[in-house]
Image 1 (tube, rainbow, N blue to C red):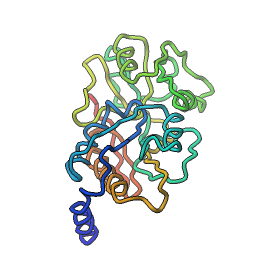
Image 2 (cartoon, rainbow, N blue to C red):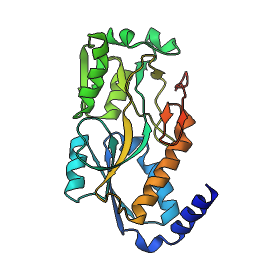
Image 3 (cartoon, rainbow, N blue to C red):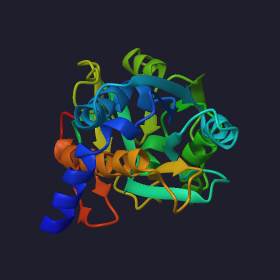
Amino acid sequence: MLAAETEFNRSIGDLSGRVPKVLRIGCFEPFGALFMPEMLRSYLDSVGDVEIDLVEADQVQLQERLVAGQIDLAILYDIGPIGIDSVTRICKVPAHAMLNADDPLAARDGIWLAELAARPLVLLDLPHTATYLLTLFDVLAKRPEVRFRTRSYETVRSAVASGFGMAILNMRPIGRATADGDEIVRKPIFDELPPPTLIVADMYGSAKPLFVRVFIEIFHRFFTAVGPAGFSVTTPEREVSLLVARNG
């Protein structure tokens, strides 16, 4: 491990001349506000300042742009068809519930899916994402009434805070991202649900250039570091099971 660390640091030192002047990164839309700026800051602190072109899109659009050569990397979930062969798994991100603070369930340590199904749903209505979220309820043979649909993660938060219903989400704000207000509470779901995996997709296969390999390594380190911030994380190297904090 020490030898690998030394080699990684040596590679970083030789990297400045081999990073594109413009780094074209695509990410699933909600990630742009939730963690991408802080993660990219960690990357640039290692490789030097370059221009960042961050493309925020849905799962389908990201794969299309990657195949078309419009972005160097895509950060997304393994939800729905993934037509890219070169994929690196980062971590699993289990679903959790977002509730209005006045909901009686907000005082609980965790919630069962059957309890959530009785409440109206604020749906993050993005391609593949909406299907995945609704399919979670199929184990009950009962889906909740969809009261509010939006493509925006921020609008989901606002709608829950305004009392439109509950939401099921996976990622939560990390680090310096804007935290939830007092009107919102997040709780773990007790049911064993299939968690999506956060992945980095590229078109390089086994011939990844150094700047891509370094990006993936730093991305791994970033999520290993933020894992204890409050959601369950399973990385390919190790598993860390954590409950969402009562007020988080």
